[in-house]
Image 1 (cartoon, rainbow, N blue to C red):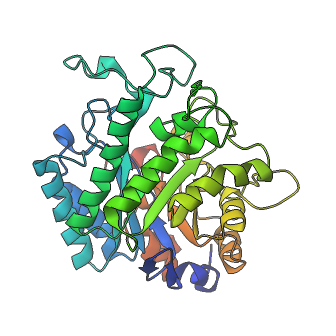
Image 2: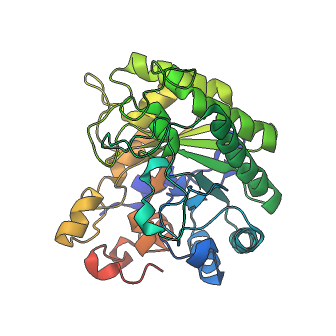
Length: 370
């Protein structure tokens, strides 16, 4: 079990990337599908407030879909458009701020991950750079330049609404095989125009999204960008095979206006490239010089997918190693997912050395994600 001394670096204030936080603990974005019809209700506001009350430094909401007919893969994920949904998010912001917390929405488009069978009443087809699913199946026609401009505008409008509602920043979801990541990945982006080509060329859509968001929110509103190497159909996938390629990939995104990178990995302790102990967040910080969030099975006794398979408990391991990496400035912030999903007081209990009170994480816990 960790001691409060081991955890102390997690609870030092953070200032960087236009963001000031009381500590380094971030609630990772986790899809819950608890917003019927896309509208977050009072239960959603209470859910986020509980995490703020118990000492989470920054909350990143579950993915919220932008205003586009094919943006969602699930009818109960929250929208970030429309009067009723935005009123719901305004309530969330008020509740979190009243509890002393800070919160940013993750804005999202699933791209080719949308299944038409989930929406039999809709004629909106999945959209992507080349109309290819993650497994390479031809599903729809490639996006036109006009359609791409419309999507970029959708991200910008969502970010502008986030600022208007009082959020503390915005995160652009560019990871996990969704729309922006489909432009990044050579298997799903076969375009021969300015939005395709080599690794740098495939960043153009994201670059234009970031620039449009920056124009919509101004210079002082924090922009976080989440990316990953892995894909749901290929955990070993890599956009960048070497640190040099990662630099080529990150440079245009950083220059476009990203303040903080969120480097999504499945296990935070795994090195990203041979010959170095740095994980993906560590390499991102080294290359860009910008603050970075690390994530990946923090607070669990194993990588999270095995917990679903085996129903294992949530012992806390690796906090000392995590804190040492923070001390070395390998990364700046630590996103916690499933552990905070199950236990709203996770951060407080870790801070106060009350680990014996932590709620276990297993299949028996999944019914009540409080």
